[in-house]
Length: 76
Ligand SMILES: [Zn+2]
Image 1 (cartoon, rainbow, N blue to C red):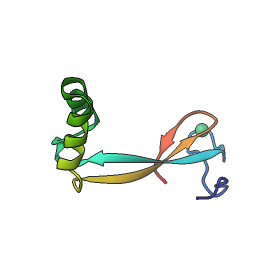
Image 2: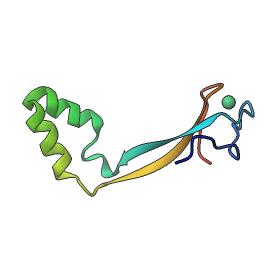
Image 3: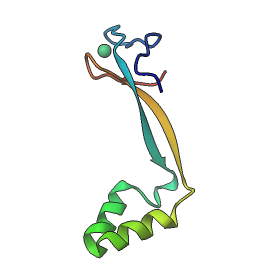
Image 4: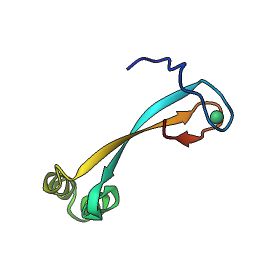
């Protein structure tokens, strides 16, 4: 991934210093970061690993852009 993305500009302030981020989105709410953390708190690392294994294929990733100037998050 290139560091400079001069073709993408912020819709809010027009800055070109935007950075892509990837967000993991869990489907059906069966397992998320919060429940993973709960498992971690209750069961320790084993609980976290179990949660991740159980829903290996039930997530998707989305890419967003974050403006380096104003912090605006947007889809391109
Ligand atoms: Zn901006």
